[in-house]
Length: 299
Image (cartoon, rainbow, N blue to C red; front, side, top):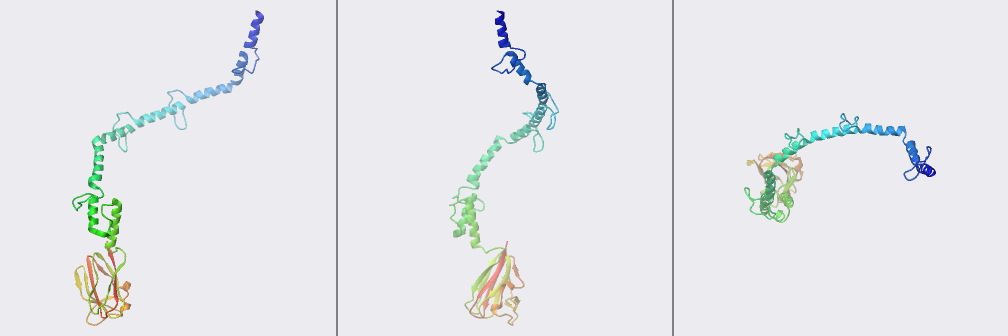
């Protein structure tokens, strides 16, 4: 019996110097010796260090450079609590108050009635303000935007795409093109011309409303050209002729005109300006040539 007992002790409990103990092999003493070999004093100190780094749940003083993990977490929790505020917090503005206070202010101001205003605005934009693309009845005091645009396009006629057949932007672009087609160029030089087919006969060279300047007049062909009538802003001036420098001068009985081909319009001096309207009537002593006026309208 004693022999059996010793065999069990030696087999399972093992000897004091047994080694190579694992989770699946070795005696009890071998397993203990394995643990004692691996569990050094240094490694035991690692556990103490981890415990120190984690800290206690009530640690304070945490920052980005100091404090235990719990201390840092506690600072973050405090910040979130202070930033979020209580559920019923008030006094939120664009410059003050917790997140909950700001949200509560928004919820207070953003009432169901005010939210409904957006629905009303959306409905009015679609049906009343902008209206369908084929809306009619637009006037200066009534009608949706599309109705007004359609009426304008109808009045402007063929210079625009058919009213009510395309998008609002496309119709606006069409109106812009139409205006450019029927209105004189503005803030850039343009010209008008008339053929002088009969001698000593008045021809209207230019008759426009607006504000701008006359930069020059040129007459090709032969003969003696004369501005027989010049009306600026409703005021008629005496007939004008041309001098050798291509400038206007007052007629005084004698001829002061130059050879017609010498009247280069861009050298007109002084420039004639008008604020509301101008009318120029010209004639030539010879039945030939083309009179051209160079002018600019300003906004």
